[in-house]
Amino acid sequence: MRERVNIDTDILIIGGGTAGCLAAWEARQVGGPELRITILERANIRHSGSLAAGQNALNAYINQGTPEDWVAYVRYDLCGAPVREDILLSVGRELNQTVAMMEKEGLPIKKDVDGRYLARGKWNIEVNGRFLKPITAKMAEKANAQILNWVYVTELLKKDDRCVGAVGFGVRDGRFYVVRARAVLVASGGAAGIWRPRCSGDAHHRIWSVPFNTGASYAMMKRIGAEMTGFDTRMIPVRIKDTYAPAGTLAIGANAPMVNALGEVFMFEKEEYIRMGGHTAPTPVRVWACYQEIAAGRGPIFMDTTKGDPEKVAGLREQYLDMSPHTVLYWGAHDIDPAREPIEIEGDSPFLVGAHAACCGAWTIGTTRMTTVPGLFASGEALGQAPSRFISGSWTCGRIAGRNMVRWIEESGVGLAELDPEEITRLEEATFAPVERWSKQEFYTNGKPVMGILPKEMEEHMQNVMEDYCGGRVRYFSISEPYLNIARKRINRLRRDQLKYLVAADLYALQQAWDVINRLDCCQLAIEHISYRKETRFLGYVNRTDYPERNDAEYDCFICSVWNPDTDELTFKKYPYEQLVPGDRAKETV
Ligand SMILES: Cc1cc2nc3c(=O)[nH]c(=O)nc-3n(C[C@H](O)[C@H](O)[C@H](O)COP(=O)(O)OP(=O)(O)OC[C@H]3O[C@@H](n4cnc5c(N)ncnc54)[C@H](O)[C@@H]3O)c2cc1C
Image: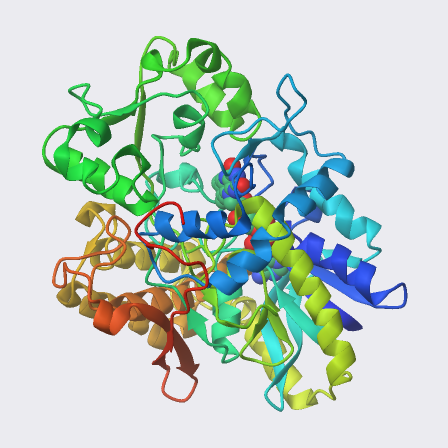
């Protein structure tokens, strides 16, 4: 008999990362000492999630101008996309205050000679990033939240159309966790590892994003029936080749120009790119330009650090030690000196994110952060249609969610739900099914189950399908319906017919099994959303070769989907875009 842990709480936070820890902090400030706050985290909050390796800048900070200016910049940077300006404004109005609070809590922020934050452009400041996660985690500890590390959440609980808790398994103790809550926040990050990574074998985790954020946010919210949005804006980061460390540190941090193999500063020099914004073109367009150059035979692409600011180039190693220490090791091992030679960059595989430079996530009601399922809230990468919030915006969004959860509990007066014991038993069986299957295996060949599929095998198959048929880098990120049809067929075959053979030898493999289950649901979201948008709006991220033009009449709006568990299909609906910040959306400023 497996041990079961039952927990009752007022507020349940899934994911003790950037948004989750600050949600706990704010909920405590607003809800008072009696409020029960619980965090479930698959790793350990002191070193989990996007901040784990450190980062050297807060990409969202209002150095000059107003929150409206920032929102205008954000929508411009996503090709003038419809974005949730209401949500972004609510973030912009509290951004700087949140950063000041985190500085008070000990975050070292670099300063100029006049004592002002060291700005990198209008919207960015430099920090000593190695302290980001411990300080963020401390906020949850100071909030006196009940923190359960090493608990992998598998499903949200729903009763009478309301979200009433979640279940998961202990990745070290193997226990089944059942948590009842009055309000639930999903803050378990974005989705990496959907498309085939560039590195193979033991290095397959060497990707730009966190390999352990595997789409649980999106998959769990989809499965509980929340409206999901923005999966047609997947993000493709152009990063340092082989280490996939951020290239912005070379561009904005060291003033190194982006050049092709001929040494041409193509974003400055070529009419076709100047017309689209030149070196300040929207992020997806700059990705597209790199690939145009490579396709035309002018690759590889470099950040020419030999032409950067010498003093800043000399400090690059120190900068990377703050966020991607392996880059410094890699340069050492390969005798690369950025002062002597340009640094090669390239597009990593696509990622699904909502707080970085794309819009994936749950649709939320007004600025409450509550999804279309009452009692279920979303923040950080899990929140849709509000891109470019990054670290400071995710902290801020976490705070806003924490505050609104307390408010919602008070105003609605909801209590803890009575759970159906049969439903919980069914969920327990589903959670541990891959290990149960393994224990029943009778035939093995070379240690591999004959009647089962290992998570790694399923993952590789999935990544190959997405790479080849849903616009991977081998297709120069281009997509068309005939490819999508094959992707749909093969991914659905894995989801509908093959998952019943998924096996896991131990608890570690069980995590991998749930990673692939969640990733497969993310594949469905990406394929169907990209297929629905029959136009090309985010050139560089999603290039529809069959619909190369923009079609404002049909798609200048928000596109949401709801999953139907009976048919396993997504049903689509549209919401109108509401422009709150006036001005030309194709311009960087209002
Ligand atoms: C490599 C990288 C570099 C970046 N660089 C910068 C930068 O320089 N500046 C900047 O401002 N922004 C940067 N960003 C963006 C910023 O870090 C993110 O937007 C932000 O941290 C996201 O916060 P989050 O709370 O949504 O996710 P995270 O902080 O990643 O938190 C998610 C948490 O959920 C946990 N979790 C996942 N699945 C489960 C599950 N099933 N059960 C329980 N727990 C789970 C994870 O372990 C993790 O702790 C970067 C992001 C990445 C990935």
